[in-house]
Amino acid sequence: MAVKFPHNGEIQLEAIINASPLLNTLTLSYVDTRSEAFPGWVIGGANLRSLTIVSNDNHGWQVAELPNLHEGTINLEYCDNFSDFGGLLAGLAQARKLTLNKCYPSFTEDHILETLACTFDNLKSLTLWTHFEEMPTILSTFCMLRNAPNLEELDIMQMGSFRMQNGPTACVPTFKLCD
Image 1 (cartoon, rainbow, N blue to C red):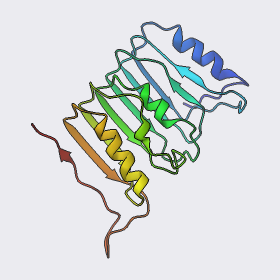
Image 2 (tube, rainbow, N blue to C red):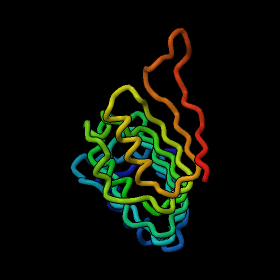
Image 3 (tube, helix red, strand yellow):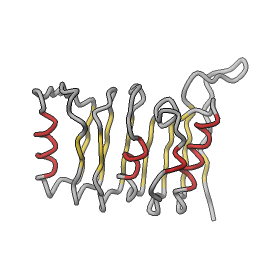
């Protein structure tokens, strides 16, 4: 089902989400807001356990502290402009399972995520869609891993135009981190 919001409708959606204390699962898939003047909206919810954002556009997503977040999925594969990916990640710091699609330098304005202001102490499982075509991308991946000290399962999926010689698009296999 497609939902289109009226001008400044995201303000109303933000208010509805924040006024729903029993909300435990939120999926925002291709939410279409018409206002480009809106600086961003905050996704909150003290009892939110699962958050999924899939979008082609930068809607200024901000995530408030989500103390009960178990699982987060951020899929911005076709979004070419995102202002604060590190800030968005910081809002997901309590998650136990994360799936991130597109967090490489063209997306982070060539800033390495080395200044990520949070650690993912609860994170046990990470699926990361990225590419390793440039050094900032590799360093951003290492930063994310460094900030997840209790990670037990890691899936890294190769994106982009990198091709193995005479072969299909490369896909990095699943890594299992063990004690």
